[in-house]
Image (tube, rainbow, N blue to C red; front, top):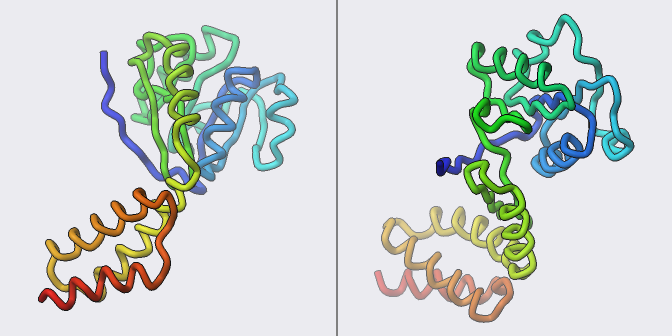
Length: 207
C-alpha cells in the first residue's frame, strides 16, 4: 500500500524513541537532522546514541503513557515485541503518530529513508514492503543531487520574499521566480544580486 508523504515541522518538538539499539540509533540520527527534541527510553542504549549529546535518555517504566502523551510522534524500535505492541496500543488510543519497526501493520506513519541537503528534504518509502529498496534509492538520489541545489533553494526562498514586496501581481511574481530558478540551474550556481535585480527590474519595466 502506498502512503501519502507529509512533511511536518519537528523543530524543538518531543520525539520519543523506544529502544536503544542500531535501528533506534538510525531513527534518532534522522530526527536530529530536523532539530527534534529526542528522548530515548531503553534499559540499554548503544554508544551510537550515547555519543549524541542532544539526546535525553531514560527507562520504560510505569509512566510510559505520560511520556507518550508529551510526544509529537513516537518510534517503537525496541527488541521486545511486547513492548513495541504496548507502545503502539497507547499511541493509537491517544491519537499520537507511531512507527513500529517490527510491525508495519501497527504503524500510523512510516519512517522514510531521507535525503536532506539544506532545506531540501526527500522522503522515500516502499509502503513498508522493502526498506532495502528505500535505502538503495536514497543513496542513488543523494549521490546524484549536487550540493548547489540546496544553495539555490535557499536563495529562491529569500528572493520570494523580496518579489512579494516589489512585484504586485501574482502571475508576474511567479514569472520572476521561475526565470530566476531556471537561470540558476542553467549556471549551476546561485545568482548574483545584480542578476536578481535585473530579473525583477525587467518585470517592473514590462508593467
